[in-house]
Every structure is written in structure tokens, then in C-alpha cells.
Length: 111
Image (cartoon, rainbow, N blue to C red; front, top):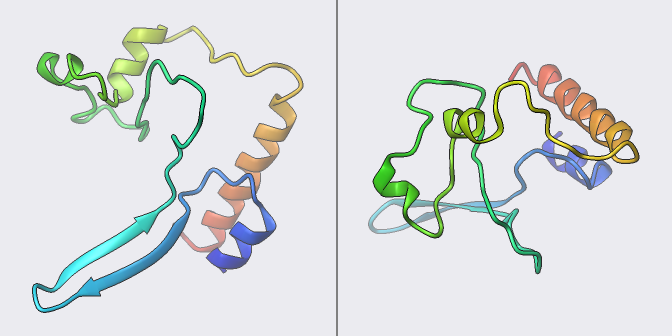
């Protein structure tokens, strides 16, 4: 089901998994995923949003690192709770349709 969904919906927002491997003798497990930041564009801020507030803020020490990935509470503080993310009127219908499609797929899997 996952493979079919990802092939049929190339713009899916779900994580793209390429493989899961177990390396012996240490029995290490390796998960290979797509890098969503593989772009020529400069990315000024990165956020890992989970929809939770529990433990979802980076420390001041982490914030100083140039490769920091901010979290949910950081997002709220940076953007302000009432300030929407601007995606443009032309992109909104495509974004909303893909979110609905991905959500329906996850619901079908009881995830």
C-alpha cells in the first residue's frame, strides 16, 4: 500500500523510505530515507513539526548551531500563533488536496 501510494502521489508529504536493513554481527538497524532538504535554494530556517508541545523546543546551546532544526514551540515563537504561513493562492489547492490524500491513506492504515 505504501509503495503504491508514493508512486501514485509523487508530491506526497509522507516520508520517503528507500530501505530498512539489518547489519550483522552488531545487529545494527539502518533506515534509509529521502533528504527533504536536497535543494540548491538557501534554507534559512528548518522546523521539525510534530503537533505536540512536549519537549518540542531546542535549547539555547542548540540554537547557536548553524544546522539547528527548530521544533514546534520554536515555530510558534518565531512565527507568532496567529501569523499564517504564506504559500500563495496558486499553491493552496494543490497543498490541501495532497494533505487530504495523505491523511486518507494514513486513516485507511489506522495510523
